[in-house]
Structures are given as structure tokens and as C-alpha cells.
Length: 274
Length: 260
Image (cartoon, rainbow over all chains, first blue to last red):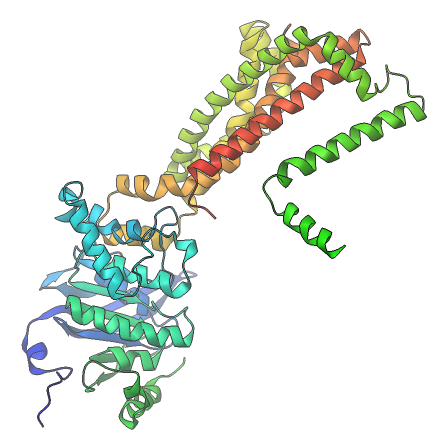
């Protein structure tokens, strides 16, 4: 089959070395003095430039996986390797976006987006001298997500969708190698959400980072991902791995196709509740 | 009629309504008060009419002014001390769990002591005058500031912390970029309350341990049955309180311009 479109999970992505490797990772909490196993024996690897989603019922430790990767809460059992080195503390080169946009209300949109450049090296040391150049970078990103002209607005003046766009720009401005998304579209209305998927995809293709998405929305996972992992309820581990082979870029029209529907149905069959 | 109604609605939501309405109501209350004292023949040594209070104000103007300035000065000095102490304490207990565990119970325990009970001690230690007033104003005002500032630091959303931590931000950066701006609205909310507390503190102290100030004036006027003068003193006090409140409300609008 000859096609000008690039296919997901193409050979180049598979052949390159993994950025992240989970090696028999586990997580336990002490609940009323009793050990409760949250995650059990999780092993997988994520390639450079891959878009990976984790889906599963609530409370199966999906957010914990992101915290293990970012190093905010390193894996207590087993190892998560980043470029072959175990993660034990917050790692550089990460962008995060949460379900709530957590913009700082005392900063306008532009200042919010530029926050990482004030903190992350090598941008931090040049922040004063190259400020105009950095502003240009931020403006460019904001234009990509359709927020041009809102730079001087404060968060309370924006709609939920606009805030989330600004939050994604903040997560990407310092060109992180890893983008961690914790249900970033969960709080938006369905139509805005679908719009955001297209925007997210073009952002991801543009900055070429490895993306890890936590979501409850199966259509969202199929739309955006190369690989989807389905997690079981507690104690959770990967019970199903789905490679999505839809052509990129995914479009809203494609979501109406039988192929898309079958992928979503396939995922749904593997979701179990505890 | 409807035209008037819409006009009235527009006035209610306008800026000037916040000044005009309370002012009008106050004047109306004074008029009612005046009428009632005449109608019910209340003697001026029980409850003087507003006109009698105004007369006392004009007659004893310089003395009132003198004492008002004294009260204002001690209040502001005590308040200034309480802002510095309150902010430092607030940030300390909001930032450090250990400091919180050690200091908070002590602060609460201390705050339950009625400050009036301390005034005679202050007079004993520092003599009659401005120092007991400043101290009492300070002691009453610093507590709400400290509590609010620590609350401001404590209520930073964990996600906001995580954004900074995942970027590799230091504690100092957290403090500068999130901690301080986040506690600003809390600080200003407390300043407006604390400045009234400072007034109460210095006046309480003046009634016992001073021979100057509005507190002293009110007590000495009452004891010589010059009730109109006592009321005049109270009136001056409440006007100063409202003015200072307004100053901080205006300052708040400037500093926390980003809040809705």
C-alpha cells in the first residue's frame, strides 16, 4: 500500500531506543495500617516521539504513573528508566498539564505561558537578555492554539477551553522531551474537547515530543495515540495493549468511520470495574 | 415609573452608590435620633442629640484634634508593627510544618487572653503614655494578619506546586512566584480587619493607661458628665476607622489588580 500519510507505530519509531522503560513497577499504600496494592508488576517501554495513552477505571493509579515519570513521586517498587537511568527525583525536560489548567491568576496569559522559561535552564540564565525572543516563541505557540490576541488577558477573562489551551502552551514552551497530560480535556464540554484533540495533535506533531496521556475518554485515546494501554482495577497492571494504525493526522471525519468505531469498541470490551 | 426604576438600578450598581448610600442612611439615622431625643425629652447627659454632639465638636475642636492625632499615631505605629510581625509569623507557620505545630497553639492560647487585662501591666512596665497604646494595638492586630497570611500560603493548590516542582523550581522560586502573590488577597483581607483592631487596642489602652488620646478624652468627658463631648470623641474615632479602612480597600484594588 502506497500512501503519502505517515502511519502510526511506523518502523522508525519502533526501532529507536525507548525513552522510558517501566521495569516491574509497583505501588502500595498503607490504608488503616493494612497494605493495599495499587499497581502491580507494571512493565512496558515507550519509544521516542510516541504518543501513549493510559485508560482504565478511576482509582487504578493512572495519575501515580505520571508522578513516577515526572519524578514528583518516584516508583517505590521496581524501576522507571529515563534514557536508561532510574528516575529518583524530578527530571528536567518535562512538561505537565492537569485536568484543571492551574494558571496563576496574577499573571496574564503571556506571563503564564512564559513561566517555565523563568525557571528551566538554559532559558533561565538568558531570560532578561532574550526576553523579546522568548515572547516571540510564546506568541507563536499561542497562535497555534488560537489564542493570538489574548496575551494580555488574565485567566478569569478566558473560557475553560481557552485556559486549557494556555496551560498546554505553558507545558510546551520550554520544548520538553516528555509531555505528561493528566486528563487535560476532562473538564471541557464534548465539542470543545474534540476541537482540542485536533489542536493537541498538531502541537504534538510540531514540537515532536514524547507524549503520555491519562484519560477516561476512549475516543480521545484512539484519536490521539499510537499506543493505548488498558489498566485493570486494583491491583492494576496492563491488561491490554492496543496499537492504533489510523493514518496521521487523525481528523474529526475519521471518527465516524467503522475502523475508528471498532477500535473504540475493542478498548471498551477490556475495561473492567472492580 | 419604569424609567426611574432603570435609572435607580443603574445607580445601585455604580461606583458612587457605595459612598452615597451609606452616607445618606447615616444622615437619616442622625435626623431620626435628633427627632427622638426631642420628642421623648431625653436629657443630654443620658443621650445627647446629634446637634449637641456637633456643637461639642466645634467648641472643643482643637482638643479633639489633638487627642485624635495621638490615637491615630499610636494606632498606626502599633499597626505597622503588627503588619511586619504578622507577615513574618504568617509566612513562617504557613511554610514550615514544624513552626506551625510549635507556634500555632501558642498563638491561639495567647490570643484568648483579653488584652484589656494586660494594659495595667504595660502601664506598670512602661509608664503611662504612648507605649502601652502601641503595644495593645499591636497585640490585637497581628493575630488576624498572621493567621491569614499562613492560610494564603497553605491554600496553594497542590497542582500549582507540582507545576513548579516538575519544572525543577527551587523553594525560593516557589515562594517568590507562587507563595507571595497567592497570599496577597489573604493579607489584604486581614489588613482591613486588623486596622480596626489596632484602633480598638489603642483606645482601650488610653482609657486606662494614658492622659492623652480619644480613649482618655471619652473617659474623662464621661466622668465630668460632658456626654456630648464623649460622643464627639466616639464619632471622630469611627470616622478615622472608616477612612483607614477605605485607604486599605483602595490599596487592595491597586495591588491585587488581577483579582476579579
